[in-house]
Length: 197
Image (cartoon, rainbow, N blue to C red; front, side, top):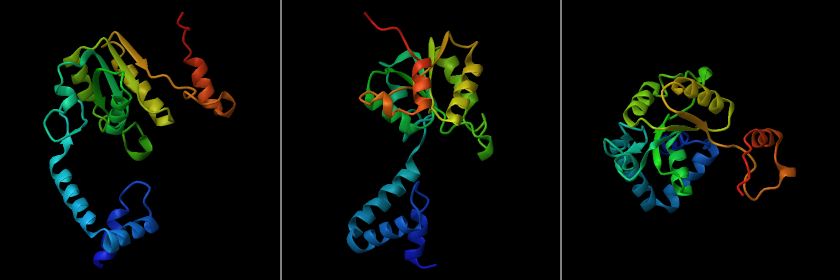
């Protein structure tokens, strides 16, 4: 296999990148961005070697514990369970949550061979025992697998914490009800709350 073909094939491991997109990227790097390609290759080599998962929360980090787990200012009464490190980034960028996290790095999907063992449920139980949070917030995605995962975790933790809650799903801020799908509207109605006076 030629070096060009090997590069095109390697780029296809990225999500959403098929043969044509990979070919376009490879040719761009080789024809117009050699310096950028070298930077990319070096950054990938360093990241693949240095980045692992946090021993406490399973988020990505270069150290035994991530910066969030090492931060003593975080609220240990709250633990938020998410599917991926991208979810942690989104919640941190949104602001408002000052508790700790546990990253499943996936969701239950028996057809794909992903069961509780692959999601670190034993580590989650250890994390709950260590932090002794008052509330565990389940922030898995509102997909069939995400809902099944949230249900499984809720059952696992029901007698271990005072409160297990689920993030609200519903009509996005700034959108219009008439353009919102039925499933989202159903979740919004079921997750309604009192109006603050």
